[in-house]
Length: 491
Image (tube, rainbow, N blue to C red; front, side):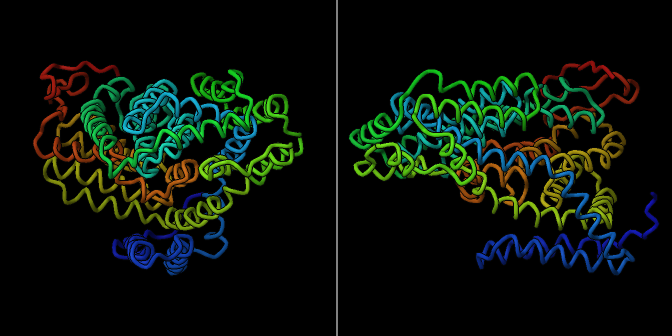
């Protein structure tokens, strides 16, 4: 069905976007109001604009429902993550990884270790969510046991998780960006290295030296680490079989198995392991899966938990389907606003306006970055943040004699990697919920996630590492100033 409603004027299209940013900046940033209410107010204002243009209430509510329907896979994954974490507590999987992490990793190296480990896992699997939800959760437990700043540890995990997600050929976003930008996968990955590797080096240096800083890592006394280790040993029967659930998840990520069945299967196996190895009952396993794991469950099985240090309970009491309900509410509020915004076509109007003011390469790169951040912030959808700017800016890049791999690199730098830094996006909600640290707390430490934008801007205004298309050979050859070598691309 063709939409016959007129597009809003630029001022009208810009209004809901400005209002949302203003409400969040003042209401959330300064007054500390709940994000959910602010997003609902933004949705209501956008709904009034839609009604003014001529949309009926039925069309508005259908747009919201359609947006939420598309988000349902993400919502189901978020819910399943809560159950997965609880089931891994029942089996002893996460405590087992934390136990060995406490023995192997010292406080001064936990940040750099968290960054490197999640980088390797995400690079091999192509999934930032899977990396954070498996080894990331375990590393957060190690950080808690070592008295290391949880915000810094979460930033290291998120940085590492998105390093691999950004350049792995197994990543869906890495495959999607070149498709919508008019280039090819491995050309895109090669060009991404120019902004990704410098960010990786900077993050590595920061995490290494931050770990040596007493202000960042309040070094835990050996006695306390020993108390936590002994506490875990007294509660669980550790066995190498406990690594089966995370190995299963990582195998599924590598082989591109469906996420939900994989997570549910890993949860079932974890509960079975908990029954066999940890003497929990099936009822306790199901209770933990729904309501969250609690250390008091051990007392029901005859364990004495009164002598445990508080850190053990803080480590173990987490997860459950119920723990994600607040997260799901935030998703509903964010996508209500995004659904109405998409209905009236406000983003297309605003982004089209950018194209008329562009005169230089630096302005084009800057406009692409701003447009992509606007899309990811207003739609809460990482895929749309690649799709919309990728489609709108292609011709502009070609007209300025720039290869479209510059476009694919820029939208990944400003879209895929920025998404976990926005509290109301799916990625921001997932990372905060899974790692147990608010998005804005770990944001300064997620160095890998924002250095890409910095280097993209530097390259845009200096012309360094900007691939240009030779006019007479525009169909098959581009010159990359980073290598000064002609790069042949397959179309």
